[in-house]
Length: 411
Ligand SMILES: Cc1cc2nc3c(=O)[nH]c(=O)nc-3n(C[C@H](O)[C@H](O)[C@H](O)COP(=O)(O)OP(=O)(O)OC[C@H]3O[C@@H](n4cnc5c(N)ncnc54)[C@H](O)[C@@H]3O)c2cc1C
Picture 1 (spheres, rainbow, N blue to C red):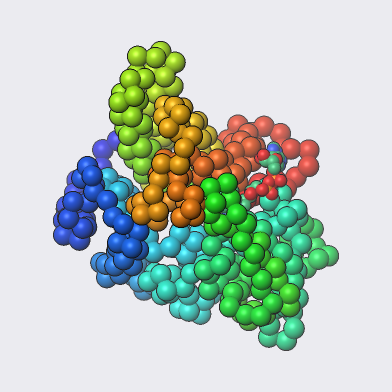
Picture 2 (picture 1 turned 30 degrees about the horizontal axis):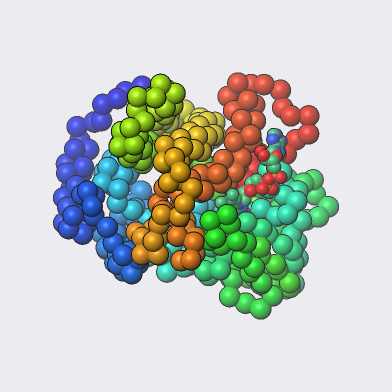
């Protein structure tokens, strides 16, 4: 593992730093900096436009599709510099982290030309239609059907836990297109317009009062025949690509967010006079150690990618399992440190919270309470921690496969 960055990337690092200094709002990141919700919304809109104008969204993508064609190490430097100052670096998660790279890898030329520009500038909102009531970890058991009718697919079935379906223009959806084929075959990956009769979106309210995800029902929904990504009945392989992006996306920078958050938790512990408690000290030290492990594992993932050794799926599974369990445990510690204060709603409806999932205005959780609630879901989405363990067991440690095949999924 080489911990030094090549000298050639330093001018690029300087360019990014300068751009950030010139473009971030005054006082960004300074103690006490805050925005009202209205200000945060306006900032999000303006920031996406600035990122787009600067060419920073998906800058690793080829120039012909609107990227800057950055090398891997340049992309890492870009991610690092944005992470250091906690500046967002995307238009929308589902578009530029999941379906965009999937279309680039598997899509036809026509699909790339049609969808990639709207992903880059954030003008097409996406959601992910993988999970179903009886197909989560065992995703290949999905039952939603797509049948050909001339130049169209006709879709019937149900998805569940579909995050942001209520705002989406398109859903990237897995449907069974050959019911006679074995369960991993006969699935296709379709890009389906959401704004049409036959799609019903029903929000599911979560523990903090927010309703980010939904049930989505499909009754004779139509989609052009050409909107299959990666070929008919080849959807399983395409879906695994998407899940790889979902699990591996923040491997090299994730630890920065956790370090910043942990610094805040340590400060809170000191303020509450809890740092003399040996059990608290032990839990804090464990958390600190785990953030360091994430940093080192990030370097491992980077080295793997640079060397082309292609252990990405296994490393992605290790990372996803590790950070999500770390975060769940650390959020519990943070709430414990607040004592009774942790049990009351200390947020306000004007909090600087739009980037976190949060409850309704009449259920004002604080930043930390919102992060605590959300941390409970992090060991589930994108494939549960148990499923990641199965992947690590089978693909890293070479253990025998589970008796019943098929459980390596998530959305
Ligand atoms: C916040 C959030 C957002 C989400 N957003 C989306 C989205 O946008 N689109 C989408 O398609 N899905 C989404 N999901 C769904 C997510 O992908 C599934 O919840 C996840 O894959 C698990 O499936 P399940 O809920 O059906 O649980 P199940 O698969 O029923 O699992 C139940 C329990 O059994 C365990 N288990 C199951 N199989 C095995 C096994 N083989 N070995 C060991 N343990 C096992 C699991 O680990 C889990 O603890 C989201 C989930 C969450 C929490």
